[in-house]
Length: 163
Image (cartoon, rainbow, N blue to C red):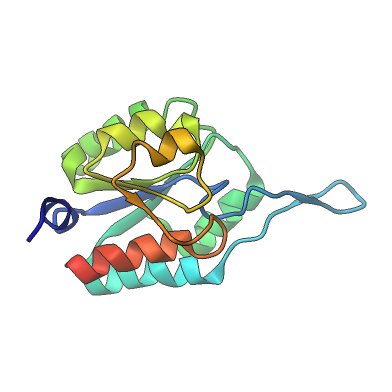
């Protein structure tokens, strides 16, 4: 078993950013000004498979504070929902205290520079194929899939496979 595999088997919680991971970073606006985002249904199945097959909890930590994101999180019945999070590392610390977890038991997937602190703190980190260069240089796993097109699912399957 290699070092990454040893880290992956310890994971109890997978946290993710939203824009650039669960979405493709694009925003659509209706004529009435309503904001719309596209989410991959494959990612939703990844949430379900993590729970059922390896008992890994799932949550989001995002700077965005949006009713649309809240609705998606509620539909997925996520274990942790943190919207409007400007300090993701502080959120991670609080989650770990509340759930009695070590940082090494948490995985995170992010795509941009505001994710770097949490990426460097967790046990295993990943990013979509189209993440920013600074992020790609810091993560444990660069996924083959772009954000919003099943990147979360790809990471979920890696965790499942190792467990």
